[in-house]
Image 1 (cartoon, rainbow, N blue to C red):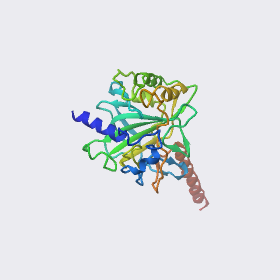
Image 2 (image 1 turned 135 degrees about the vertical axis):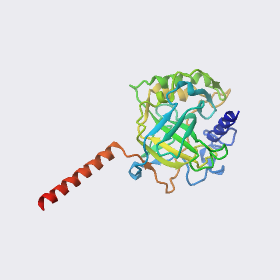
Image 3 (image 1 turned 90 degrees about the vertical axis):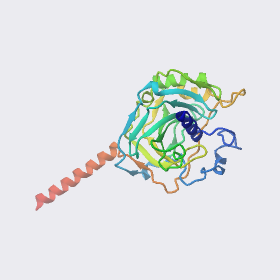
Image 4 (image 1 turned 45 degrees about the vertical axis):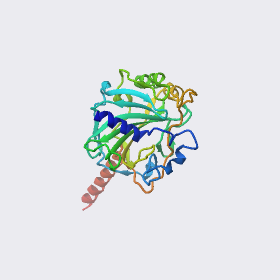
Length: 304
């Protein structure tokens, strides 16, 4: 029972129900969210990451992914009317990656635009937005239900930017998009026996290279309790996958309006510093600098 209550609470945190907010209407869309609690804060998400302004943090090491390769850990998939969410059963955990403890995964959800020609990611890299974005939501172990959204590091979200590759066919994403017809109407739930795992969805991504910053949930109530990780390399999917999300999922019934453009615009950084892992090019540059310094020292010693 506690697990069920907790899942309901996190669903509300990530995607509150009701008519108070939406993506599609000027009366309740993102431009109006600042009137809701916390959405007018100074540490809001998503953001545009300017790579030239990032700071290398050498303590941002590799993640440990527990349960990510287990297809049985995916519980069910649902259409909330604002997003597609895949829930997980107990036992999916991350640590490392500069996080302050163990974090349990509860669900992942997706944001998209209106097909392959329309950007739909929430985060941007140097002003570039991608066609989709996947968020895996984790909560810190050892915190109570009420503490999760109020602690600065109570929630950890892994963000995977998604791009189109016409020559790419990732069978896991093909399978995931095939479930969409079973949850086309809002409120629909499919408790399928998943044949894919989280790892199969992100297998192309180098998970040692990422950006890190402190921010918020990207839907009301926009609690500023999230440690964000945005991986540098995107997930590549076929155009059919992107178009399926934009055409097979509806935000209402019986009108069956396609659920599209379910993203929040980027927010001001307000002085926040975005950190980055040391990339291969940065390591190479550091190696060159060390080598040059060594040559100079040898030259000086030889001269003496």
